[in-house]
Image 1: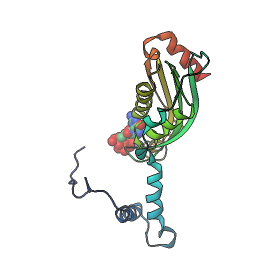
Image 2: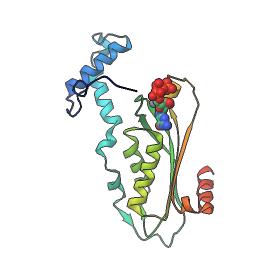
Image 3: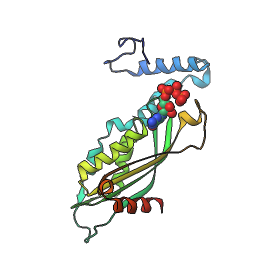
Length: 201
Ligand SMILES: Nc1nc2c(ncn2[C@@H]2O[C@H](COP(=O)(O)OP(=O)(O)OP(=O)(O)O)[C@@H](O)[C@H]2O)c(=O)[nH]1
Ligand SMILES: [Zn+2]
């Protein structure tokens, strides 16, 4: 859709300072129909500003860094490693509404493995940004493939989108599922079946 707001008005290229953010939130409160000057809302703009830095802390987090410490000694283990049901929260880039769900991340190791918590750290580094679920799924899989160099990666994400439940189409209990398969899980049907079976077990 065409947008008639010019770049200067929306501050493109200008680093926002806390006062800009507070003012924007006061405007949003007015837009919502309330009065920023009433007692209960007086400190809300600063709180919301802090909250959004926290929701979006992934912009300051380098996902690849979490995959830099690797382990070679795994006693000959050469099968799938799966981290299942990792809860996460994100925000959709269209409405900035919450995306809440869980991710399943599996890989078939190449020459080394990574500390298992690091898979969740990679997920959160990308989830704590403004996202669409498809990109989140791809980014996690691509990062693991590029930096861990496994034989294959499978990422499955299931989530509910606040922009569908609390507004718009207002359809609760809908789950969006996305998956990205790389390496053997993309190329070999048997491997893909095996990992999907493990995820759904
Ligand atoms: N593919 C995809 N769509 C998403 C995601 N998060 C939100 N959306 C959708 O983004 C779309 C934005 O559509 P628009 O028509 O531009 O916005 P809208 O008028 O607010 O749309 P409605 O939500 O249908 O009211 C909506 O259909 C949302 O459901 C996501 O992670 N992936
Ligand atoms: Zn949305």
